[in-house]
Every structure is written in C-alpha cells, then in structure tokens.
Image: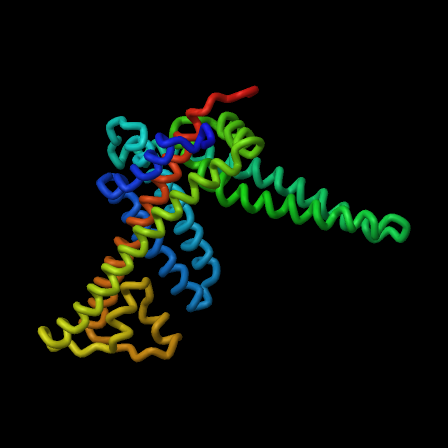
Length: 304
C-alpha cells in the first residue's frame, strides 16, 4: 500500500460523514445556496425582461456569494477536520473575505500554465502545416497532445480542484499551495486520485440516500395533501420544487401549472427541501476534500 494510501488516510475520508453534524457549516452552506439561488432567479427574471445589464449584475453577485459562501463553509469544515473548535460563522465569513483571493490566485497560476501547454500544442499543430515536416511532426504531436490534455484534465479533476481550497482553508498561502500541487502531480497523482475516488463514492452514497428520502417522502406527502387537506394540484407541480424547478420552468416544459396560493406554497416548501438535499452531499464532498488534503500534507516534502 502506498505511503499516502494508509489506513489513517482512508479513515480520514470516512470521517467526512461527521460534516453532517457541523451546524455552523450546514448553516453557512444552506444560506449560501438560498441567497445565490435567489440572485440567480433575479438574473433569470431580468434576462426574461430583456434587461441584460441587470441580469449580468445579479448573476455576478450570485457567483460572488457562492464563491465566498463555499470558502466560509470550507473554513468551518477545516476546523472540524483539524480537530480544533469550529469558529463562528461571522468569523469564518470575515476570514473568507481576507483569504479567499488566494484560491483565485492559485487557480490563475495553474490556468496560466495550462494555457502555455495549450499554446505549445497549437504551435506544433501550426508547424504541422509545413510540407516537408508536417506529417512526421503531426504523428508525434497527436500522442503528445492526447497525453498532455488528458493528464491535465485528470489533474484538474482530482488534484487542482479538490486541494486548492483546502490548502488555503488550512492557512497556506499561494506558494505552498502550488508546491503541494506540483509535488502531487510529479509523484502522487494516482494516490490523490484513489483518495478522491473514495470521497466521490462516499458523496454518491449520501446523495443516493438523500434522494431516496426526498422522493419517497414527496410521493407520500403528495397523497396526504390530496386526501387529507383536499389540495388538488398537478403532480408535476408538487414534485417540481423538490428538484429546484419553478413556475417558469414548468410552463416552458409544457407541464400543467396551478397559480393558487397552495401551488406557490408547494413550490416554496419543495425548494427548501431541495436546498437541504443539495447541502448534505456538498458538505460531505467539501469535508472529504479537506481530509484528502490533510492526508497528503502529512507526507514529507521530499526534495522541496
């Protein structure tokens, strides 16, 4: 077994289930989803009225809220992962406003390097047009490009995306974050991939359990609403809010819509359930990323 894929590392990943008991993190992420969703709805409404500038403003605010909200939640989850007292949500938000830019800077450096790789490949493809060198050069460029682009995508998926945030949440600056990513890319990409596969599997199991609870409970509640309260609503509308749909989405899909107060209440209540169902798997995933970072950080920096 690899030094990084130890029982302690796997236990860290399994302990990500504790994220469901982190009340401040749950509150922070739920608030983030609700506010960002409201801003996105405002952006959609503005675009529907052909008010493009306002739509862009509301969408930008939604992305900003989502970014800082996720970083606030990450700080709270990192406190839990490190075994120290979880800070207040207000303190976490203040800290996120101070350090979240490090995540963007780290990602900007990585994207810049990927841009250089892409530019080099484009230069080789342009050189492949030359009549006397084109065919042999293209024969070499194809496997090189496939490997570089494939490995880059894989590294972004299992390394850059999951570990950049946790590194900053643990108090690291841009340079140590980039050093960790470079070390893992050089000699620990598969180890990170195995640990992240465990996180994704755990998240999928939680998502399946949450989906079963939501769908089965929704069907039972639909029957009770009709039989017990004599509320007659289209079944699609009763279920729509549970999956994040609104009246405009239902109308565009051609589904029957009831504009009664009960119908609006069903969408609002279903939206609350949808937010809760979305928060739990997201918490598990973010907590799992923190666990993977801590497991990889404990390996000595050989040669760095």
